[in-house]
Amino acid sequence: MAGFDGVELHGANTYLLQQFFSPHSNRRTDKWGGDRTQRATFIRRVIQRTFATVKETADRPFIVGYRLSPEEFETPGIRFDDTLYLLTQLQEFLLDYIQVSLGNYDRVARENGYQDKSMMAYMYEALNGQIPLVGVGGVRTRQDVANVLQEADLVAVGQQLLFDPKWAVKLALHQDKQMVTADFGSLVMTGDFTLPLRDFLARRYSK
Ligand SMILES: Cc1cc2nc3c(=O)[nH]c(=O)nc-3n(C[C@H](O)[C@H](O)[C@H](O)COP(=O)(O)O)c2cc1C
Image 1 (cartoon, protein in one colour):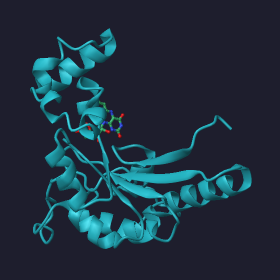
Image 2 (cartoon, helix red, strand yellow):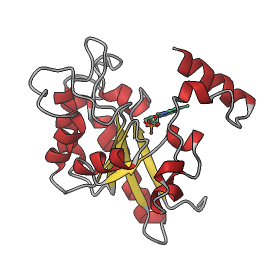
Image 3 (spheres, rainbow, N blue to C red):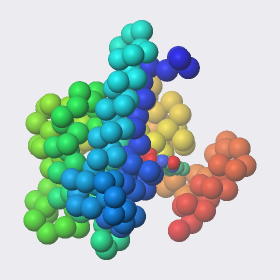
Image 4 (cartoon, helix red, strand yellow):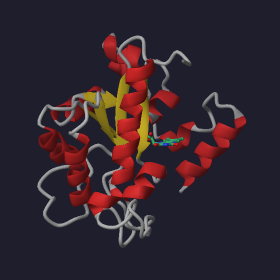
């Protein structure tokens, strides 16, 4: 009703959907907790309810995507193998895309047995073209875009757009030399940011 074209269910970055799937945060003993099949129940129910609502209310095609974080650092925690299992669950729904939340698109799993290629590449293989995969994490150049598209269907860009809002236009017009390439940390104070964001970014890049 708010006029949006779609919704992304945020199952990443320690938000609620991830908390239910995580053995670290989900210690429930009722039907919403237990083994990973049971810990995926909440995610399944939210997706089912979302699609039911779309069916009931949308008057035009409405995008439903899902974002997930592929692994947690805590023990116990979500391991990459759990994420590949979650993908099999997500594949039962007609999601328009899945986005993997990564700081660097080429990140390799910490878990043994999945070290031959990036997590994104494993996920792309597992999805087998059934649901489009959105890759993200440190994309700054045309080469980065090409690299992501080797192992994903779409590319999401975050930080580069904060510092270089016309980056996508430059990419389309082949003005690569005009893209901002400097280290983000060195750009925070010169960027045209409102105060809360500038302080937030300054803290982030000073770490
Ligand atoms: C300032 C800032 C705030 C962010 N906040 C969130 C957030 O609230 N939720 C989220 O899922 N990801 C958040 N992210 C992560 C981005 O969605 C993205 O996955 C990440 O920055 C990697 O892509 P990039 O290198 O193109 O920015 C944030 C990133 C930055 C730089």
